[in-house]
Amino acid sequence: MGVYLQSDDYQATIIFPAQTALPHGAAFGWTGDKSVFAGDVQDAADAIKIDVTTSGLHNSWCDDVTPAFIEVKFGPTPTATTAVVTYTEAGGETGSVGAVAPAILVSKRTALGGRKNRGRMYIPGQSESAMEPGGFVQAATLADVQSRVDSLLGKLTADDLPMVIGHSDPGDTFAPIVTALVVSPILATQRRRQRR
Image 1: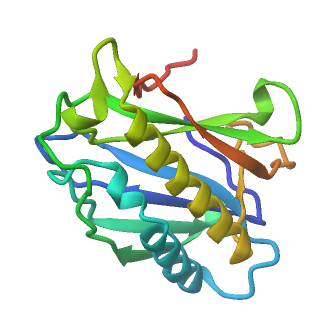
Image 2: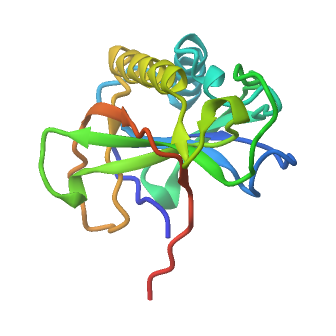
């Protein structure tokens, strides 16, 4: 099940190629609002690459891990236009990847209440140095990652590409703007859900 993009939405995804340090299909992405963005999908992809790079987000994964590209789609989903930019910033966390599955959980918060108006993202490729016993994120790493995601959120907003909560129901036409990102002190495992 994916996110349905409305006409004013975009989706950005950092794609990681198959690597021994990552689970198959590892990615980090979000949905955003492009309604006031002045450029086309390629301009957005270029701006997002700059925002991701200058926020230092790549320093949040292990130096064993290198993404391949950033893909940006302009909605709506059935007729989305796509741009891809190369993005190969190796991670900045030193040490080897502790385990393949653990990821840093980043919660998306909005000004609205309710589960439908929250979201989450997972940063893959965590090094052993970022982990503490019991499945906790090391305190210095937690503070660093929080600073990076705060920076990314601010840069996207300044570029007229604010992050929003995407929905899996095509009938949802309102996507609330993300006002804060909160990094969890507990490591998480990203799992795909099956709904029947």
